[in-house]
Image 1 (cartoon, rainbow, N blue to C red):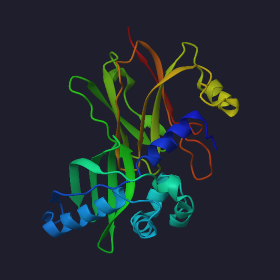
Image 2 (tube, rainbow, N blue to C red):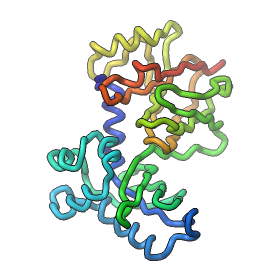
Image 3 (spheres, rainbow, N blue to C red):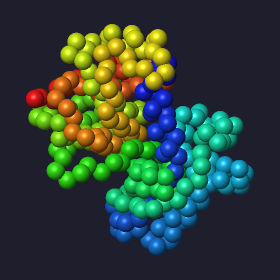
Image 4 (spheres, helix red, strand yellow):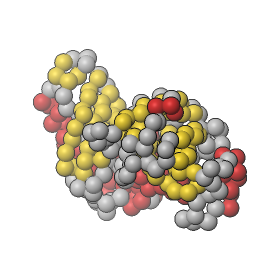
Amino acid sequence: MIRRLWWAMAFAALAAFSLVVVACGDDDDGGEASAEEIAALEETVTRIVETDPTDEAAVDYWLAHYTERAFEVIGFADAEECRAAVDDCIGEPSTVESIRDTEISGDSASAVVSTSDGDVTLVLFEKESDEWLVDGFGTAAEIPAGVSEIEVSAVDYAYDWDDEEVTDGNVAFSMTNDGEELHMMQVSKTTDDFDIDAMIASLETLEPDALPDGVEADVGFGIASPGATANVVFEEQLEPGNYVFLCFIPDDEGTSHLELGMHSEFTVPE
């Protein structure tokens, strides 16, 4: 399994997503969500986001409100493995500052939460036994006005998109995970002689904080569970030159999606 520079970034980002958001608004299967349902979700949100990893009862509640898939997303096999490394798994408590883009559809829900830590996260839910459980995550940065949004479909194992839509560096990417596995999009600037196979080979001996062969800089990052969308927004416009999308998430056998062909090169024209 490749666990070098970018995988460490992915894990750090996912660890920051160990929270849940309230879903309130319209229910496609039953009209507007009831006040009781909203209140129950709000209580779940408060208890999970404010979980103190030293409080055993609070930890029990937190662990009971994650699905098996959500544990896998944050890098733990199950609740017991999370409990054994509770400080890393749950992390420090936070508070919810705002909630937006909320949707409820039957036993599924999603919403975007901003916390006091500065995280902005899309969280997916599934209802089990009348309880809302965290089921997935995605990065949820807002795309600023005036920036061209380019849609990318992440599948198992490729990025499906039209690179001709990149006509200048004033862009952001909206990556929807249409696959069955967790996917990420690392955007890196590359050299003119970049070779994807040589880059992959260089990862085996890569030193911490070093860049692999042919990579000049890492410029953007997004990650999304199946069904979620992650926006990749850049601090500055992309400079003219060559770039690549990369996914370092491993499959069930430990082979990175990158090695399975999940990469895509593009050019920002002068």
